[in-house]
Image (cartoon, rainbow, N blue to C red):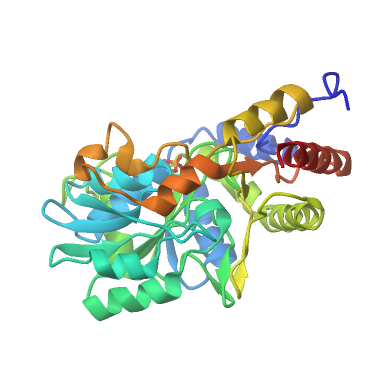
Length: 369
Ligand SMILES: *Cc1c(COP(=O)(O)O)cnc(C)c1O
């Protein structure tokens, strides 16, 4: 098959349309563009749609959300927080930014989430929290991890950056921890341009996050704590509110695309889904044990198909974070970093795109066998 003339299929494609443009225009015309009524409405609507019963606080990025959530929960110097190493650097960074120590623990091979047995073994008297990542939109083992946290009197925090609407046993991710963070970066399942939502399990932590995002002020110029400017603008919130009305349909399309790939890919390990889990397929991630990087290059160069490697270097070996864990060996993390490839699964794919992805992957997997 010669694909050189075929249109390139990107690994991700944010959908931004007329509704988003009109919403931005409405805010621009109002003349008030900083944090205001759009942000307040977005917070309420987000909680109602995705994590009913919780309080949401909007911030300027997902990374800010993790950082402020950890600070609001009292995490600081001398504390340890258990995190996966197989994740985006923002997870470990947010712990490090509080002055606490990220303690990197291995993952389970099937779903790429924190391994509860390894987590329990890593708990010390300094451990104050466990922060699993719902990687690729598949829920981590939050039920087991919440039980471990409870038994040890420590917190559970959720990095739900990639998992809007994911569930385990009918319960939404984002409702298990002291707080959870959802990212609203353009390549995530929904976007506000940049942004993050901190979903809190009580009024006290929600108030603390609100103070930290706004210079420590509730009443103007009566600063109670040392805080940041991590506010979301009404322009971004207006985009997010529109996207929120569409994310469920996009998720359904992601799930249909994934089901098609599951049914038609041959010769590669398709993503297993845990019993009782609702995977929202932020990424559709397969393993290619033999020459993953060659596979990625061939997909691009021979078939005009984009793919992604999330993530090629585990957090504990990044130059920025490796001093926290010199010489640490996490075998499943290392193997995943060597083998994973995420194929396009986003809701803009056509039936023809999906056929092309299947044909290309099956040809490459067959050729390598
Ligand atoms: C995207 C992401 C973040 C950070 O979110 P931003 O909005 O980009 O700051 C944190 N953790 C994970 C797992 C992510 O994928």
